[in-house]
Length: 226
Image (cartoon, rainbow, N blue to C red; front, side):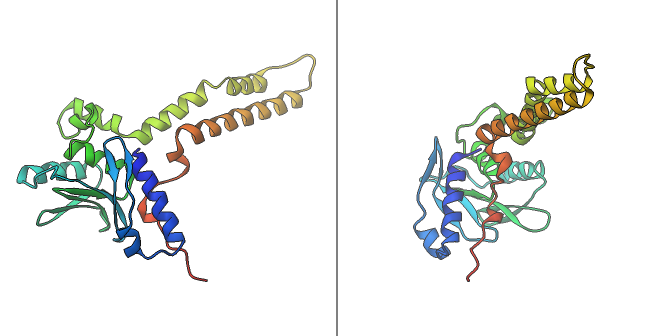
């Protein structure tokens, strides 16, 4: 997940909570960097978008580009709209989720922002982004690897499965004792299970903050006036 996008999101959220006019946010938007990714534009649309303005055009809007963008959009359940040299990725209910121009791109979520930058603007491309628009089994594997949320959930499941506290809890539930009554073992198992869940929660908070806080500019709200 693009840290530049997350930092920009938090900045805009803070400004909106202060009731800063959107024109001021747009004009005074700072630059947030994360390697080659830079978020330096705020687009006050509905929902708002956060984007990167490039010094030089990063992509040419050709027929081939449009075909590639359309395939990219379909694989994410989105539709494509074009207006001159502007390409929009739109949800099925008509909400614009991303915007591409030769020298600029923006999106409403960090994963979409990062994927567009890698696939179409050649910003820190990796194997997943290179296989993104190809066909065949390698493309399917690329899409699975690109689904970071799914990989995160799989990691969490493995972490929980191999947690020592979990297996201590299971053994306490299943074990019969000659020295302790059954309720003592059950209570101990509950405590061990609670400890396992607590450790997992701490692990997720430190390593996968995206699971606890959804970063989507559609959630940006101005604080209501008193």
